[in-house]
Image (tube, rainbow, N blue to C red; front, side):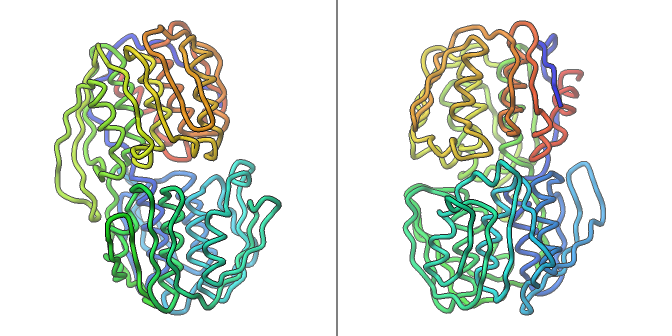
Length: 434
């Protein structure tokens, strides 16, 4: 799909509730499938990635019924496999483009005596999996992988030993996979990170009856323990909101309110960086949702933004927002430097190289190394043809750039937005018409 963007002729105004949080939706569906009993979920993101997790748990024996499709997400009833465990599916499980689905499933399956093959699309089949398979193998799981340790991946689970792991890089997916395996191991499994990553798992599992002990940058679970059913409401996705926040900051006269957003500190790094750059942001905390701090974000056009340095220790809390922040940086005075962002080369695309290439193609100024991205602001952008490379974050970042770039910006493979925010173009148009 080809998407055409021209400079905005009116400000973005009004209020939009962005879809449910993708990371929380994955976990709510997966933990409900593992649990004993029936769970009721509301606000679940209806996207390609989450649908992959839903299809996977059904193939493994959970019963899932979509009760209602609402503007705020899916209402779902899930009856888990509980103490019986997952069944061996008839064929491979297709995880599509979802790294969360395949990596978390490896942790779930590691503790059960089943053989399951996990596959994905071309993009997912290039993404690194040894960071998950290697520590799980230390616990006793067995894996067969394609060359270089990538998907398709065969998982043979069974009796697990507990483990203690020091991750070289903060990763919520790796951490979660190990904690989920630890639920089936006899004894205490501990995962420590060098910097805080998303802690949705640690917040949600206790609601399913699985105690988590947190000590600084370490999280532990003692197994075996059987999760029990729970009811979960999913807050709005901070990462999806970021693109509307960025658009409002850059289009003159804009004033946008985004209610019900997850304000989890491990996800709100982009708001902290934008505030440091001088963005006109107002964050109003509200009641917790699903054990997560949530609230309203109001953002107004900001004429003067200042460049900043994003340190490596900040990156885990804003890793998915770097493409958007890079576009905002093109409008800031001075230089914005992102450090320790090499992980972006291993996402759905090489986001680091792609963002630098796109900004330069738009007549901005960007440079990359293996682990850094530097954007020099103050150069007016000019529309051009860009390829989203099947990457939802790139597609939305390019659309935001096109709202301020002179002439027309044409984005190929824009359908990638369906992975996390299928209604993005519609919500953007609604705010421009308000």
